[in-house]
Image (tube, rainbow, N blue to C red):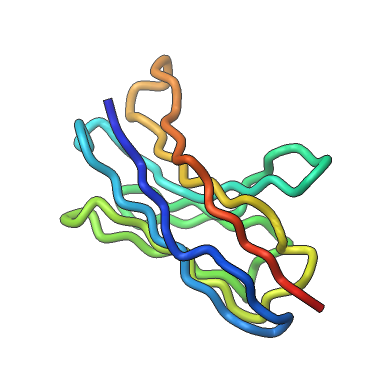
Length: 118
C-alpha cells in the first residue's frame, strides 16, 4: 500500500503562484508515475500533469507553459509549481501514484483546494 499526503493549496489572486507537494510513503518502490489531477465543481476529474520515475513529463494543454511538475525519487515527493494562475484553475487538486503493475489500482491523495480569485 501507498499513502499520499498533499500540501500547499490555498487562496491566491489571478496571476499569482502556488506550489503543491505530495509525499508518498509505504511501498513506494511499486510506483512508476506520479502526478496531479484536479476536479472543479460540477466537472469531471482531469489530468493536470504527470511525471514518470525516469523524469518524463506530460501536461494538460491548459497548463503548458504555466505549471511545472518535478519529482525527487529519493524523497518520494512530487511537486507542482503553478504560475500565472487563472480563476479557471480553481479546483481540488489530487495527487496520484500509478503502480508499475497496471492491474493494481492507482493511489490517490485526499485532495487540496486551490482557489484563484479574479
